[in-house]
Image 1 (cartoon, rainbow, N blue to C red):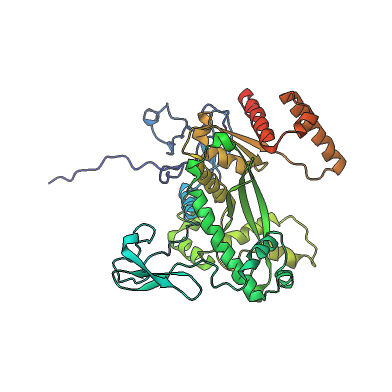
Image 2 (image 1 turned 60 degrees about the vertical axis):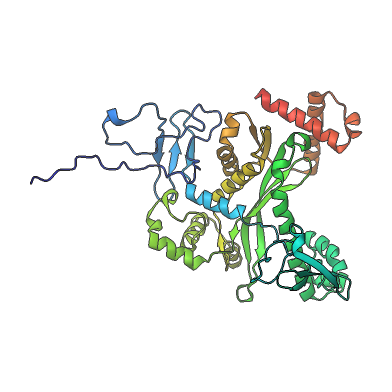
Length: 450
């Protein structure tokens, strides 16, 4: 019997990575371009007959060698680094589940009981009141298994709970632990316990607040947000290697109220550096461009060392300062450092989720970081196309004298007076809400003119 020959063409090679759960940021990120948000042809059509290439798909070119590939738009010519969609989704998911509200405690503690996990507030018929404790706390008894329990305050077992407010104020204002002990009369152990307690309460409140963003009327409270990034130097708790770690921190605040919508640190404490290297070696990631790797979210130890060598190759460092520079650029001893572009994109996508229930038009004011602006253009691309979002980049000159800064402030006051027809004297008499409302109107007018 004659064998059939397979004449089917081979699978075309991809020049752009696959989307991940509907997320694909590899398109022209120039909002002024006609191909903005239009996904380019992801396949490499070089060497194929021209008749098989769809002419209606925007192509552009993908180039670059080594770890990073660059996509160049065929219409406007703007270049952008090809991103790993899977890494963005992975970090976005981590941020979504990072804060979880505290589980309810008002139910039968016996795991074998049928009333376990059935809350007292939702099923009062399953419990009865047998009396109170010596301190007056209400005691409850399960009718099914007759187990007694109490639902006391979270601060019941704390030593000097009245000092919680003072400890919170001091740690948020940078007071050292030793000074906190002096001011409050607490020992260091109790101070650290209170810090853990405060952290748990903040996580619980943050998780509950994030669940109510869809009920906020943004037209009433304001639709402007400000995003900035900082480099934080953290003291790593390791006596064997006492050093500081430089970690990126990204924060978005609501402009009118100052409420922190999202704040993310570029550090994942749940994974270890040796495991990252082993997994990347097993998957063959080191031989692939970063956009096509199975693990592109965090830095590996070898790649970070190569990166440090690259940025310090032409920098002349005094021999006495070299050890300190090496310590400032090291990776953490526990956990892994997240790549900055992945963190920025995941931050923007999470913010879009918080705001995505209505049809308001939002304004995002960003620090002059090109990567940050491109991240917001990618995450809010559809909104920008629909004129539901505006991205404003602000440049800061931090080397000016105070006199130069005062001159710029006066110029800003004059520009505001021209835009609002409100004198400075009348403006100073306004309440904060009135100032915010007028500012929103002026900024919205400027964005619509553009």
